Length: 98
Image (cartoon, rainbow, N blue to C red; front, side, top):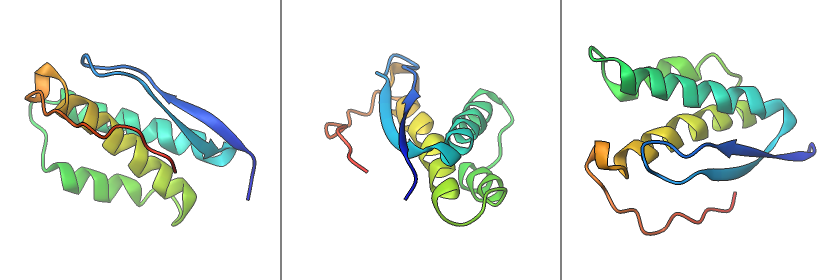
């Protein structure tokens, strides 16, 4: 197992930041996941969220890099869902250890 680095998900949409321990080789895929989710959220003519996730995740090899992409993608969507912009879903359990 490679060395772990702290990856930061910046606060967004009024939802707090988060930090995840990921391998060095997963940093880029995590960032790409956040970017792809944000692009979907910003597009007024977006297709299905699940389709975007499924297609974009295929760009990464199975395993840690793909999981990091998914983590980044779904974490940004989570931030929107829990924000005033997304309906203020009140996720109570936000502590996560991977």
